[in-house]
Image (cartoon, rainbow, N blue to C red; front, top):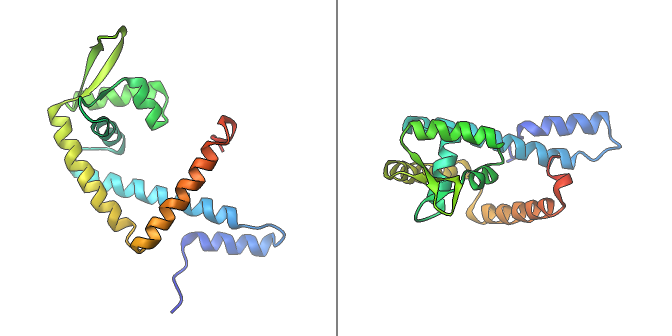
Length: 173
């Protein structure tokens, strides 16, 4: 039985036909990574919405939860983790704070700085949301067997480490 073709297979076939002198394998890899990322993020938006979360608010509260006790970080650390601009992070934090999931406090080590702390309500929500997220991601990756998923995880980690190690000039490709 032949495996179903994915949506990127069409692009690859068309480039093979139109430009047989080029190897479309890199396009196939990138296209599939982008398509999977888009589908996963859209799915996450759907399964997080009933909790009152957007992808952006989810990323803030789970980053703080992942930090462990006392579940806090500086805004700079949060925005570096999310690859957003500091302005975008400020807007995101404003929205999450308005929901009561975080609080801003003065940094005792630097009077000019602020610490973002996950509230008790935010922590409970983060715990529910991350459990739900892991369950849905397991379903998302279910077309792969456990062994295949582990192999893919290893290969993607190897690729990411190699690309990240190539220097800042390559990161915006």
